Length: 228
Image 1 (cartoon, rainbow, N blue to C red):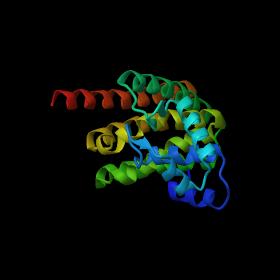
Image 2 (cartoon, one colour; image 1 turned 60 degrees about the vertical axis):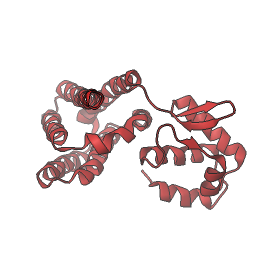
Image 3 (tube, rainbow, N blue to C red; image 1 turned 90 degrees about the vertical axis):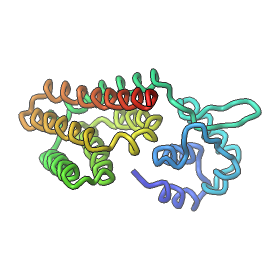
Image 4 (spheres, one colour; image 1 turned 180 degrees about the horizontal axis):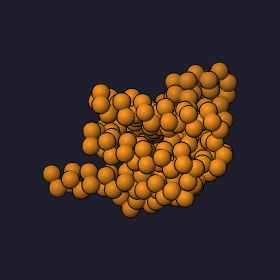
């Protein structure tokens, strides 16, 4: 996945399409550079991407259709906040989609993909021991992406990226902490054991539980924050 800076440099060399501008905005949201409730100022985005006003507005419409942006008359566009019910639904969809990928990974992944997936899982375990949540976050994203690509399903990979974006801003500051990292590593071990055994049913079930555990943890954090 290109960084927001790489995207900005690449599209600045030519007149960007609305899809490219939408990609850039989406990357900003993933990187928490644009946060829920923040207004999307057309002139700023035109300056940073080199896009036309028409293309920027078209990008807003694309993102509004995905549920990432809210467009209000007389107020313009802003980053949309996801409700707790929407977050629950997003995780439910992710559990089903990534579960299918875990199943297909057992059947289709190459030996190199399997070896790299195991290596990433091992590196994530080391991150827990060394208390390196930033590194864990990057490795975790690579692990999930590799599993989807090894399954050979680009459609699901694209869908999951979109599903992740509305809740990404919630994750790093609260989600990647010691107790959650240990739980995630244990989930990964169970998934890897199923993959190594070529047990597609077990891999699918373990992946679904892993994603569901992520939502449960996030929900518990949300309740604790409201109680405090």
